[in-house]
Length: 149
Image (cartoon, rainbow, N blue to C red):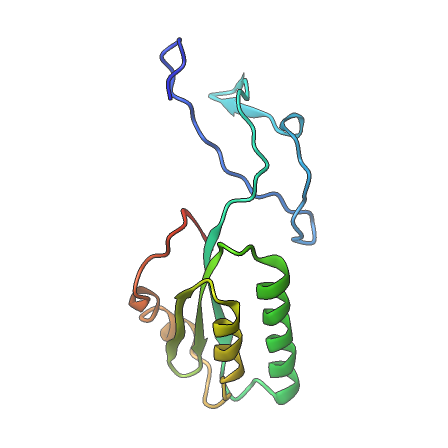
């Protein structure tokens, strides 16, 4: 897309949250100001359309996860995947303790993620970095969507 001036259209994607980390909905073009090299730029196109994301969920599966903590984590994950995500969002699920393993590869099937979370059996120690770092590249693909978390 090129304007008459020969300047390319630059897309800026933003996610806006409040002080508590909650998503801020219903923003308009007038809520944003864009600067380039200290000079205010015109916002020629604006869309508040939600775009699909690709994200991974990692859950501590070590022995430190008491039954109450695990129940709370499962409940929070179910609320997140069923109530907050869109139908085109894709996820993978990773559990970690002494080592990490992806127990559900990329999917848009929320019940598959929920079942994988339900199968977690906490045991062992927690080596977060050592567990996750070697596992992340092992997901079968990088995900379909440009937005990743």
